[in-house]
Image (cartoon, rainbow, N blue to C red; front, top):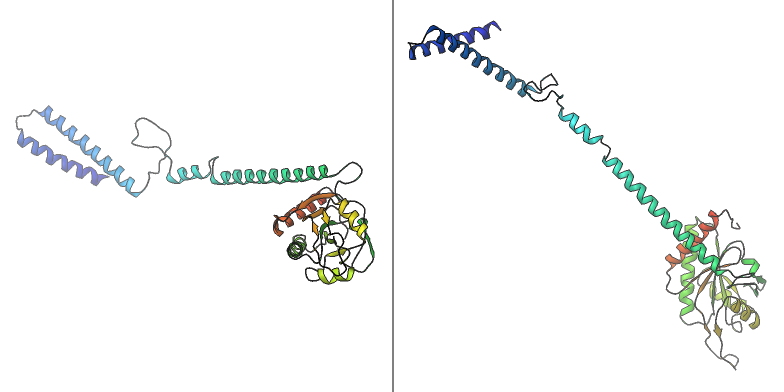
Length: 305
């Protein structure tokens, strides 16, 4: 401190002498005023140098701006300003949580709406006293044993009507049925939630032996059913299936059977659920079946093991 004052005094002395040489006629009072002015200027320059040095070394230790003349608010560091943006009420975490919550609610309402629509369609498909599609029947399985509509209850059933001499449509639809069987089993973790059924529209030629050999080419889980002409006619009428065979056909003569091309999905109580047509893919049909299975379980109902 003493050395700084000595330097300042020497500087002021030199300034005073130069000024005295340039203006020798100045009075002593003028010289005294000049000296005080020089001291003030030197002190101001020293203060500015000190502040500049402090700024280069970092922010001053005081949280108040020493050079501020209009406000005494505490100065905020860069770290404090960054922290303010990170912890504000509208941070990116809050925005992400808001978006995820909204997306979850939208998905939930869409799924619930689809479920209620399926339930509404199912209720509309039921008649008063008995279903509009489906009903009692008596047929024979591939072993020649009696098989009735009661044997389909307890699980969902997937019923198709066709005949073994069909040249193209029936094989294509049975390939689709085989794919659906595997996909449904995979989607239900291997559980047997559905019975696939093939009912012939041509009982004159489709005996149990013929059906067993024919269906083995598509999938071993398919249940084949046949019967007398009247029995087949009755079950086709119950399922609203149209079929016709030519009249006066001679024994051994080949012919085609005209019939409806639909799969009929029935619930575990034997009530009609929905139709699956040729426009439906195995993937879309599988989703439809599994959705109904989940709806059934969600209502607290069980399926047979």
